[in-house]
Every structure is written in C-alpha cells, then in structure tokens.
Length: 66
Image (cartoon, rainbow, N blue to C red; front, side, top):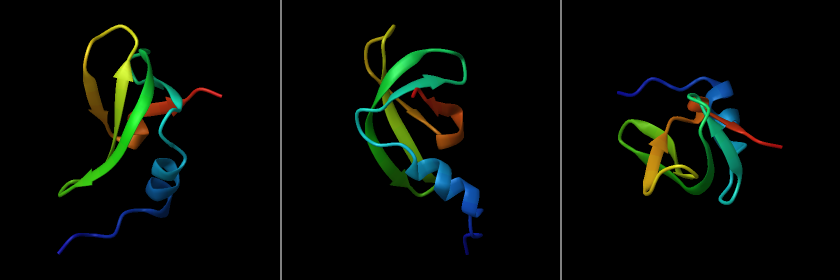
C-alpha cells in the first residue's frame, strides 16, 4: 500500500502547466512539455534549451520562472 504524499507535494506539482518556462536544479533553462504520472508518482517532462530531447523531473527539482 502506498503512503499518502504530503500536501505540499501536490501543491508543488500543480503549480506547473504545459508551456511554463522553468529552471532545473542544475540551472538549465527549459519549457514544460508534459505533466505525467507513473507507478512512482508525478513527474514533469521538460525540453531544455541547451540539449536535444525531453527530460523527466520530479516537481521539486524544477522552479517556475515568473
């Protein structure tokens, strides 16, 4: 049985939407292209400005650029 996630986790994940500009935990800029969930939980897929391809991140590893 899966333990409930803290309320702050859901608040953090819900602040992102497709098209948001973000900065990663290692200071790369990118754009959110998909919000998804798998057996391990929620994740955000971003396309980084400096690399080809799309990369999955935990919500707490990204910060939305205002």
